[in-house]
Amino acid sequence: GVEVPAGPAFDAQAAWADWSAASAAWGEQPALRAQLTLVDATLRALPDILRGRVPATEVMFPESSMRLVEGVYRDNPVADHFNACLADALEAAVRARLQQAPEARLRILEIGAGTGGTSALLFERLRPYAAQMAEYAYTDLSKAFLFHAEERFAAGQPYLRCGLLDITRAPAEQGWETGAYDLVVAANVLHATPDVRRSLRHAKSLLRPGGLLLLNEIARAHLFTHLTFGLLEGWWLYEDAELRLPGCPALAAEGWKAALRDEGFAAAEIGRAHV
Image 1 (cartoon, rainbow, N blue to C red):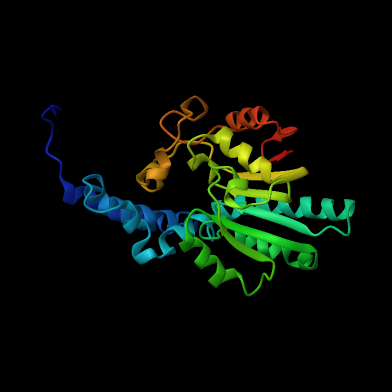
Image 2 (cartoon, rainbow, N blue to C red; image 1 turned 60 degrees about the vertical axis):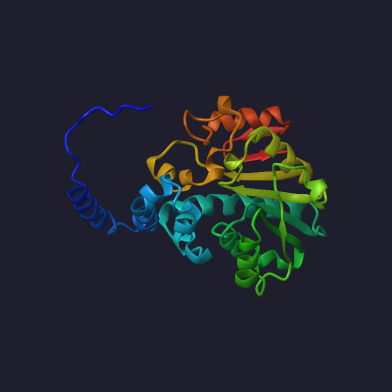
């Protein structure tokens, strides 16, 4: 049993009034609006989520809608900055590959593309190279995200291919060609797997020799993530706690570099890693 010591009475009404006032002020900042909208929804449902009365997925994805989480991944200054960094790296890699082999037909695979918050910008950057694109494989664990991608992106990207991929399992066993992709992209997804080294190994298997793995990953624990994505089962799947930050699936930058080295990436730097 658990004994809770007596303490001062908690005034829930006053606490919610404080939260409403504070969130209204924070909401004036564009960088915080999407996060506030999402965390407000999860906070108000938190007692029912913790009691098992309401699945967190129903709160975060009401009626299977992406609207609450989509803004966390794009159209806010923080997400847009890191998506732009990833897009810059991708565009530079594409240019370098085509300078090396002008006749090349590029193949790119994105792991856990989700709502397409990162993909949307990558497609914009790839537009000048459409004639050299053979395939952009948009993958996820959920068919719902693949349907979303087909509705949103297929018309403008004739090279788009949508397919299921569980990066915790060998891609070859799931029908994906190994050693075939020039670039593999993973934006805020590999931390949500049980074994980061194994996931990196599977990502590496998809790359051709000299291919590039582009990662965009959280690198610190944050209360916001615990009160939102931390309510989902996938947040707590990790089995390699020695690599993770305490009480969180995120890895520090040095942890990522160590894991990449362990899996045989020839050069592991913050921001990019070559096979």
